[in-house]
Length: 150
Image (cartoon, rainbow, N blue to C red; front, side, top):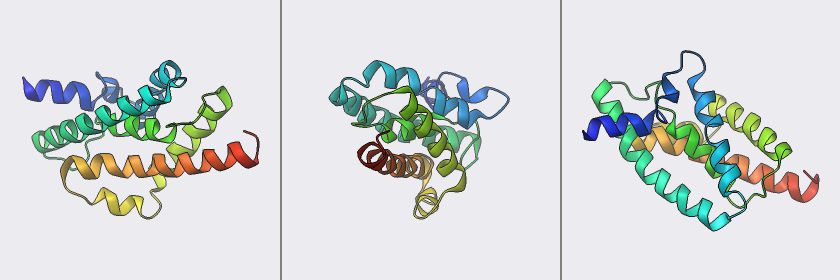
Protein backbone atom coordinates (compact mmCIF):
# COMPACT_ATOMS: atom_id res chain seq x y z
CA UNK A 1 0.00 0.00 0.00
CA UNK A 2 2.84 2.40 0.84
CA UNK A 3 4.38 1.85 -2.58
CA UNK A 4 1.05 2.53 -4.29
CA UNK A 5 0.70 5.90 -2.51
CA UNK A 6 4.31 6.76 -3.31
CA UNK A 7 3.54 6.23 -7.03
CA UNK A 8 0.39 8.35 -6.80
CA UNK A 9 2.33 11.19 -5.18
CA UNK A 10 5.48 10.90 -7.30
CA UNK A 11 3.54 10.90 -10.58
CA UNK A 12 1.15 13.68 -9.47
CA UNK A 13 -1.78 11.27 -9.63
CA UNK A 14 -0.64 9.81 -12.95
CA UNK A 15 0.28 13.02 -14.78
CA UNK A 16 3.86 11.77 -15.04
CA UNK A 17 2.66 8.81 -17.07
CA UNK A 18 1.44 11.00 -19.92
CA UNK A 19 3.33 9.86 -23.03
CA UNK A 20 4.93 13.15 -24.00
CA UNK A 21 6.93 15.75 -21.97
CA UNK A 22 6.00 14.52 -18.49
CA UNK A 23 8.17 17.13 -16.73
CA UNK A 24 6.30 19.92 -18.47
CA UNK A 25 2.95 18.43 -17.46
CA UNK A 26 4.21 18.08 -13.89
CA UNK A 27 5.20 21.75 -13.89
CA UNK A 28 1.84 22.80 -15.32
CA UNK A 29 0.03 20.76 -12.67
CA UNK A 30 1.25 23.24 -10.04
CA UNK A 31 -0.60 26.16 -11.64
CA UNK A 32 -4.07 25.37 -10.19
CA UNK A 33 -2.53 25.20 -6.71
CA UNK A 34 -0.75 28.50 -7.31
CA UNK A 35 -3.99 30.10 -8.48
CA UNK A 36 -5.82 28.73 -5.47
CA UNK A 37 -3.23 29.61 -2.82
CA UNK A 38 -1.36 32.47 -4.48
CA UNK A 39 -3.33 35.09 -2.58
CA UNK A 40 -2.58 33.35 0.72
CA UNK A 41 1.24 33.26 0.85
CA UNK A 42 1.43 31.56 4.25
CA UNK A 43 -0.94 28.81 3.10
CA UNK A 44 1.22 28.35 0.00
CA UNK A 45 4.34 28.18 2.18
CA UNK A 46 2.73 25.57 4.47
CA UNK A 47 1.63 23.55 1.43
CA UNK A 48 5.11 23.79 -0.05
CA UNK A 49 6.70 22.43 3.14
CA UNK A 50 4.28 19.48 3.13
CA UNK A 51 4.77 18.80 -0.58
CA UNK A 52 8.55 18.99 -0.16
CA UNK A 53 8.63 16.42 2.64
CA UNK A 54 6.21 14.02 0.97
CA UNK A 55 7.98 14.43 -2.39
CA UNK A 56 11.37 13.42 -1.05
CA UNK A 57 9.84 10.29 0.51
CA UNK A 58 7.75 9.34 -2.54
CA UNK A 59 10.57 9.91 -5.02
CA UNK A 60 12.94 7.76 -2.96
CA UNK A 61 10.41 4.91 -2.77
CA UNK A 62 9.59 4.97 -6.49
CA UNK A 63 13.20 5.33 -7.64
CA UNK A 64 14.24 2.42 -5.41
CA UNK A 65 11.34 0.25 -6.59
CA UNK A 66 11.96 0.98 -10.28
CA UNK A 67 15.77 0.80 -9.90
CA UNK A 68 16.08 4.11 -11.76
CA UNK A 69 17.82 7.17 -10.28
CA UNK A 70 15.26 9.70 -11.57
CA UNK A 71 12.34 7.98 -13.32
CA UNK A 72 10.72 10.08 -16.08
CA UNK A 73 7.26 9.39 -14.64
CA UNK A 74 8.24 11.11 -11.38
CA UNK A 75 7.06 14.71 -11.75
CA UNK A 76 6.27 15.78 -8.19
CA UNK A 77 9.75 17.32 -8.18
CA UNK A 78 8.75 19.73 -10.97
CA UNK A 79 5.54 20.48 -9.09
CA UNK A 80 7.54 21.29 -5.97
CA UNK A 81 10.04 23.39 -7.94
CA UNK A 82 7.25 25.44 -9.47
CA UNK A 83 5.74 26.06 -6.03
CA UNK A 84 9.20 27.20 -4.88
CA UNK A 85 9.37 29.68 -7.74
CA UNK A 86 6.17 31.41 -6.63
CA UNK A 87 6.55 31.55 -2.86
CA UNK A 88 5.61 35.13 -1.90
CA UNK A 89 5.21 36.18 -5.54
CA UNK A 90 1.88 37.88 -6.35
CA UNK A 91 0.24 35.74 -9.03
CA UNK A 92 -0.58 37.14 -12.47
CA UNK A 93 -0.86 35.55 -15.90
CA UNK A 94 2.36 37.24 -17.05
CA UNK A 95 4.30 36.06 -14.01
CA UNK A 96 2.98 32.51 -14.31
CA UNK A 97 4.01 32.38 -17.97
CA UNK A 98 7.45 33.88 -17.31
CA UNK A 99 8.03 31.65 -14.29
CA UNK A 100 6.91 28.54 -16.15
CA UNK A 101 9.20 29.20 -19.15
CA UNK A 102 12.24 30.08 -17.05
CA UNK A 103 11.66 27.16 -14.67
CA UNK A 104 11.45 24.65 -17.53
CA UNK A 105 14.62 26.11 -19.08
CA UNK A 106 16.53 25.87 -15.79
CA UNK A 107 15.13 22.42 -15.03
CA UNK A 108 16.42 21.14 -18.36
CA UNK A 109 19.79 22.97 -18.46
CA UNK A 110 20.58 22.55 -14.73
CA UNK A 111 23.00 25.43 -14.13
CA UNK A 112 25.34 25.19 -11.13
CA UNK A 113 24.71 24.24 -8.38
CA UNK A 114 21.47 22.62 -9.59
CA UNK A 115 23.36 19.75 -11.22
CA UNK A 116 25.32 19.16 -8.00
CA UNK A 117 22.11 18.77 -6.01
CA UNK A 118 20.94 16.17 -8.49
CA UNK A 119 23.78 13.95 -7.20
CA UNK A 120 22.34 13.76 -3.70
CA UNK A 121 21.05 10.29 -2.81
CA UNK A 122 17.49 9.09 -3.37
CA UNK A 123 14.58 11.47 -3.14
CA UNK A 124 16.81 14.34 -2.04
CA UNK A 125 18.62 14.44 -5.39
CA UNK A 126 15.42 14.04 -7.37
CA UNK A 127 13.59 16.87 -5.60
CA UNK A 128 16.20 19.37 -4.43
CA UNK A 129 17.62 20.13 -7.88
CA UNK A 130 14.13 21.29 -8.92
CA UNK A 131 13.73 23.25 -5.70
CA UNK A 132 17.02 25.03 -6.48
CA UNK A 133 15.86 25.77 -10.03
CA UNK A 134 12.66 27.15 -8.50
CA UNK A 135 14.73 29.30 -6.13
CA UNK A 136 16.56 30.76 -9.15
CA UNK A 137 13.21 31.56 -10.75
CA UNK A 138 12.05 33.10 -7.48
CA UNK A 139 15.04 35.47 -7.50
CA UNK A 140 14.57 36.36 -11.16
CA UNK A 141 10.85 37.03 -10.66
CA UNK A 142 11.55 39.22 -7.62
CA UNK A 143 14.05 41.27 -9.67
CA UNK A 144 11.66 41.49 -12.64
CA UNK A 145 8.80 42.62 -10.42
CA UNK A 146 10.91 45.24 -8.71
CA UNK A 147 12.87 46.61 -11.66
CA UNK A 148 10.95 45.65 -14.81
CA UNK A 149 7.43 46.10 -13.49
CA UNK A 150 6.45 42.51 -14.34
